[in-house]
Length: 637
Ligand SMILES: Nc1ncnc2c1ncn2[C@@H]1O[C@H](COP(=O)(O)OP(=O)(O)OP(=O)(O)O)[C@@H](O)[C@H]1O
Image 1 (cartoon, rainbow, N blue to C red):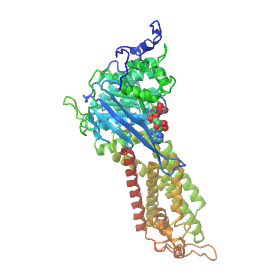
Image 2 (image 1 turned 180 degrees about the horizontal axis):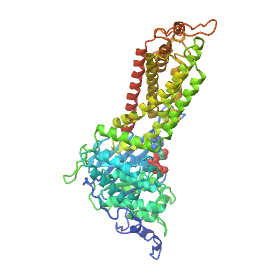
Image 3 (image 1 turned 120 degrees about the vertical axis):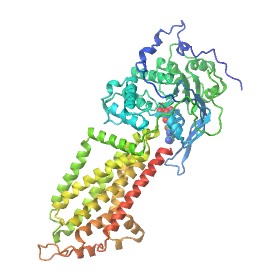
Image 4 (image 1 turned 90 degrees about the vertical axis):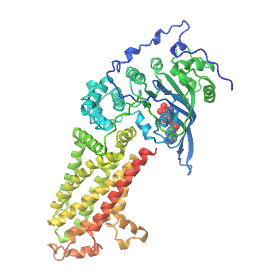
């Protein structure tokens, strides 16, 4: 194939000069690097040396399966059509292209964030990267477009906790504190040490995102649209910061970007342009305009090359994407280093001897403790929701207690008491389930980011979440139960009170486990109705319908319903265990002998211990399923 003849293009020559006016003037686009680069100018911080990483990829394809209403069978859609390229250590690379071109998809595939559906080779220092490589995760970091910071932590606290998690306890706290202070200073955030993350500006949040990841000094940094939402000045500062990060420690910095200004565009070392899932340019930014002009697209005078690229990509110059892609394959670039795309057999990155691995992260128990502490810190700053949750339980306990007052000891109040017990269980099952069903999906974004960047493992995260949520839900349920039990006049006998509390709280916690499962596996929009539907389905069996009246194909639900087990146990706790006759202030009270009621309800042979065991087993099972589902979500993307 004939190669495209490129005009003379030196990396030192500004891309802007290719679009200058006829008089050669480019006054309007004069570059002021230093004024943009407020951060990192005086870098005092010294990182432990990490290996330099060159990243190459060959014939990368990515496809997704799409379902639509008309097709029962999913349709496969290819988003990346066999793209190749390379990114070098010490360079700031931009991935650009029109909206929907596949920029984020390529970044996700290169970062290892999306593995499922990806094909092709990704080479790290010339060696094929294995899918889900743990080593790669520790070598790179991925900073997503939206900042997922905990609003309730100050920047200093967020950095300190991240330092403990990522750098572990083999190095002193004093050293970590110095690292935190120096990094914050380096990124121009030292005055934000005491500022809550939720109150930081968009640009400050982006810089804090970067600072958090720099604690472990990853040699490769991926950023998805780091400048989105920033004003022009913050945008330039952000790119200047990335440029310095690439230069200072010879990091490989790759980011997707939308429409940078001419000045910002020139700050990138290399460009990878995509359109419709195909590569339409790869190489130094300075060579973009000469390359496009060589295939018949002349950049108008005083035009921003980044805008020009977009116009070419969407076909405004009459060149098809296929022709652009073909021109890329035919052109040869004058790179400073030899090509890095020769693959060696499957292996992970081998650091050069002069480099040092970062210290090991915190151990299992330390991670549990740190994550729990982080949760408590956030709650300390924003406890309103928890107070409301607790007060609601107290309030509804008083209301229920008042409505059903005295029904616990009166023979003609048995049916009212039956409704109270059912309503009480339904209430604590709902509050246990829905509080986490809706809150957990919001946690997922933070968890995904931090887990992907290897701040901690899933198990400590899940355990620390339970360490808070379980006692709190138990306290809420106990508050409601204590108040309403007393007001409704249930028997004041220690074994009944104990059994009542233990069974009710266990049912509430099992419902909470269901809530975690639904929240972790379904989107919020589905979770809001899936949670109540499941709760109602299980609650029907054992309350509105007796076992003998249930069609045989539904009877299995009786056996696995933790709600049925809980409800029957509560009834037995109140009316069983040899309870004496109830007080009757009418001429005749049908349920004066509690056994009559238990017989009619077919629960006279209820085994409270067995039911309790069933409730606990279902709860534990749901937590195990949740943890497994989360693990798959986080590790098998
Ligand atoms: N999971 C998915 N299922 C179906 N289509 C998808 C999926 N992910 C991406 N796509 C499609 O692939 C194309 C590329 O998406 P991608 O997000 O990579 O584009 P982009 O270049 O980053 O766009 P933008 O600049 O607008 O963010 C789009 O048409 C998008 O609709």
